[in-house]
Length: 359
Image (cartoon, rainbow, N blue to C red; front, top):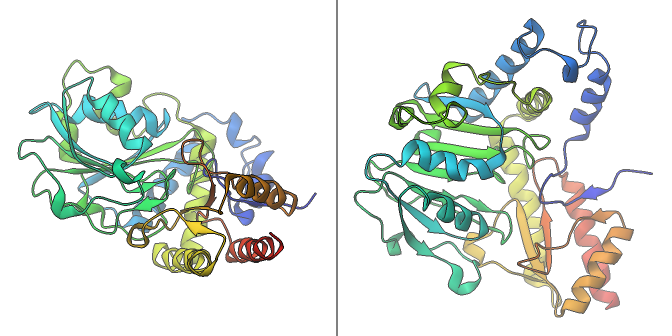
């Protein structure tokens, strides 16, 4: 069976060249005589793998020396608790801009450790937009401001950051990290689950400003303390070794492509192909206000739930898979992460045009 075009929101598609290289090294990595999956995380070979991965990520994102890269576990979901446990410790208060399911999780978890101020919400229009920055009700005494930069479920993204002054911005970038250029200096902490743009599920990337780690209370459990992970080079416990190896291959692939600037150019081109069709179609309509459209997760519907269901079923037969929208949003969702080739988006649009003509 030939490979399909996989539009899954996560775990998402991986570059074919990376999969082939991983396959070639699966049985034996280099001259180690073993697979990376069998390798001690303390071995010379794995230390070289994790060090190279970290250095590549630093180069790709131009991460300054003020920030620390951590390879962790627990998914982005653990960060909803770990962040307030470590950082909401001065005034025990944070601001969260509510733009969907993932900020709702952050609101719930942060509320266990202090006061949460919902600075703005787009729930009134089913999260189809990002609240205007001028409308935010930010707290002058918040320990941090939390945002979800790209909403995987509803298909929105930020185009500008809130003006928070000296209050650090915490950004969930699980579904958009490495997809466009960001100035890491603008953030106190960036976190991302790997399973969309970085590799298989199981690895979580955290990029944290070093001075913020000192906010952690002394009696914080070791596994939940950023300082412990930083001081142990992300190896306080056994890291997800194969996940780190795969991330390193993705970072290498991105460097060979020309870096994040080139990846952003390609991603904007891919998104424009699909959004341009949605704007001119009489059957398919995008769910998100134009100004806030995601580059990674394109959400849309037809004129009826019945046509939606039929479209998803027929698209799968055509090798365009995992296009069903999230259960809370309905309709369709095409996740066009870094690894989705331009040809995949073009094939999707061709199929959508055909489906519209026939229905």
